[in-house]
Amino acid sequence: MQGVVLISGSGSNLQSIIDQATDIDLTIGCVISNYADAYGLIRAENAGISHHVVDHTQFDSRETFDQAVSKTIDQYSPDIIILAGFMRIFTEAFAKKYCGKMLNIHPSLLPKFQGLNTHQRVIDAGEKEHGVSIHFVTAELDGGPVIAQSSVAVLANDNANSLAKRVLVEEHKIYPEVIHWFTQGRLKLKNDKAVLDGEIL
Ligand code: GRF
Image 1 (cartoon, rainbow, N blue to C red):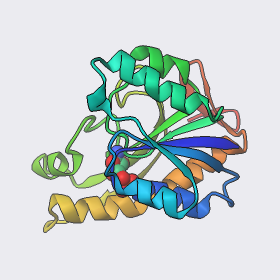
Image 2: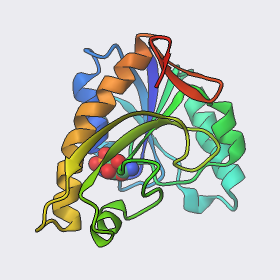
Image 3: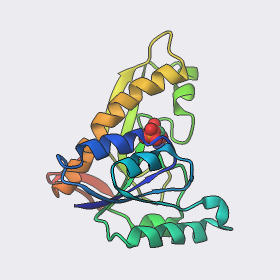
Image 4: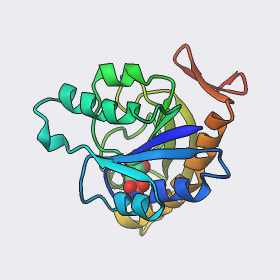
């Protein structure tokens, strides 16, 4: 199955997807970043994958930025759009256009801790458990149906960095697995619900 991966930064999730692409039946058509200096672009280059920068600062509205991203995506006719640390909020029109084939990874146990700085907020809130969620992207920010989660314990001496590192280990395992469900045709979005092998998740 053909996919496009959108990133904004380091791209460690992108790397785990690249490393497992063959096993999960995924061909990455291209990587798109909204930052020209995202390290993930070097990962794409090293893997021989086409990459593009669509710099959000060059657009005067979310609509025109989204249109440019969309135009780039559509050149590859992807079956799946994988948001892997892509740090821009899409317009409703964009989310609707790719509804049912766009996945996102969010570093919290949704619906808890939507938005940014999740690791620090989890520590500040005194949570005992934290983790990662993979969800379908719908028009609601970090609010689309959750497909899978993986949790880690929050330790007494954790800071945001140490906690983020342990969550990332889970991210790198769970995202390729979920993508594989999708490429196998086992995972679908039906009536706003995530469905795996015919069962609502
Ligand atoms: C990850 O924690 C992801 O969940 C979040 O941004 C981070 C991206 O990390 N949305 P990387 O670029 O994949 O290394």
